[in-house]
Length: 267
Image 1: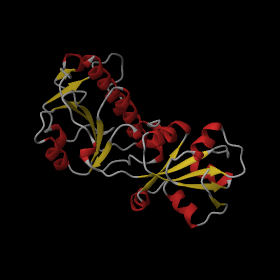
Image 2: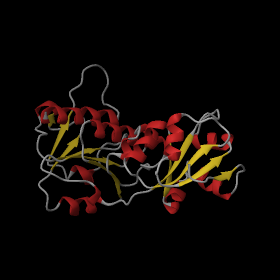
Image 3: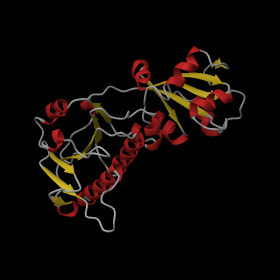
């Protein structure tokens, strides 16, 4: 294993990493975020994601997974950390976390999202829940989407709740934060992509909509739905037929159902 530095007190470096858990501005300034859990860390390493550091519990017997990862050519410093400090960064009540990774933020560049003849993308308009972002990343990855765009004043893609909810799919699915619809307009300008909005009052039922061509699915804010700005950009809107007393679905759940139908039609 590469030679490790030791951190046993709440020094400045520990406090910087601790701030990445709760402070979006500091994540952005540092250009880093924390990755917790075996599967997300494994997928980050396998996907060649740039890592600044791998933090592990000093003095604790490590699993084969943790030992092999620390001995591997995976990038980043190795930091031996007091178990109670590592537990704080892993947000576990007990000090049983083996590793936490410090990962670099990627560029928010729409060019990261590949666009081919069978393109399937998702745009999430002003989501307020980081958990919903992570859940949607996971679903988009599972059903073969090419990328996710998060627009407007939104929860952070790199919030630990989002990273955990994605269960590692964040490191497989290009996800780009875009403040303005005009950037998406420019990206769509020379592309033959149908923009389909999901809405409980959509013009067409989901099962009657053709989702086989290049499609960008728009998903609205959890409370207010699609903004008028994005609604005007839709070529058509679709609704999910429902029974029972529920008037609507959670935004991430609705998007998952729509992605499943798109994947079903494309098989």
